[in-house]
Length: 367
Image 1: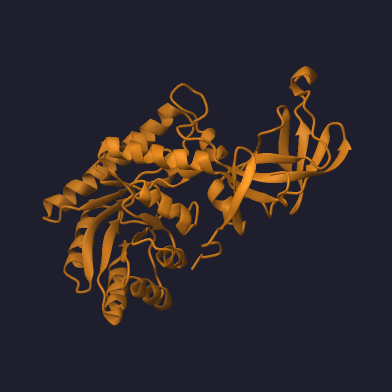
Image 2: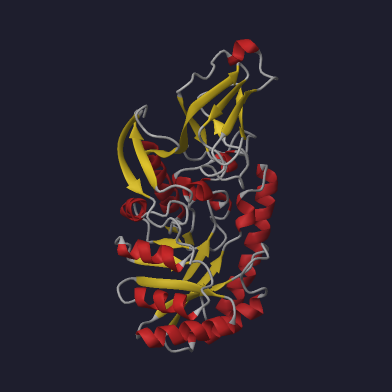
């Protein structure tokens, strides 16, 4: 790793592989299919590892991501976002010629546009009704609206009603186990009402897709047939901070993703400057954690600079480790997904040695 140019996005490949196997085992034990969210890693190579471990396929957010995944050999893809715009819909429909493609809808007009694209491409597209569980983002707002949309999808040529999407991203990052469980319980109750209404209308959903890395264990008995967990493959500081049942950091999986940075300046004994700033680490998940320097904290110093400062609350004896000019240090990103999006490649390492590089193939695919 000392030979890597920095800033570099590095993955402990063995930890990532253990995470993949661990989540596959969790899903199997719960009798729930696993459909990992590829918006996290944006990589067909990591997606193939997940499928080989037992995942039924993957999901993603954008048509461009779906294209990269399909080209990389992933045969079953759910686009978990409403796709609007003739060009994007035409691209999505073309993918259905050589992969099983599903997407979501929450409006009758969106269903009509999907049908037009499917007809033009001479394909069938599976559609899930997107249900709002309380996040107040996308999704139909009532069980009655879900029934009406499900009926429309089921009777529209070129489309196939495949079930419900029910994802509440807000639950994932509720701090404190009790508060997170309460939020999950509320979302689960709302989901139960959607499932009951659609089933009562004679449209029992074959797929109920949702949950995530922060909530899957709390949503195992909510009616889901598949989990959309994504961040579990790498983890990040944002997830550690939500806390587990004992009040410790939330770590059901290992930290496998880091940004490697170099100490480029030592202005004072209390301050070191790294070559990784806003352009290397996202800010939406809070400050990165410094792995290799106990007693030191990170703050952003600009686009290309990160500043390490000794925590004054830590006794000198506990902070004896001090950064050295030219030293390479690992940082845990606040939010892995958005940090990954800033980098062109993963540098894989094992036992401290770089063993290869994989592209972040869907980087920049936001359309």
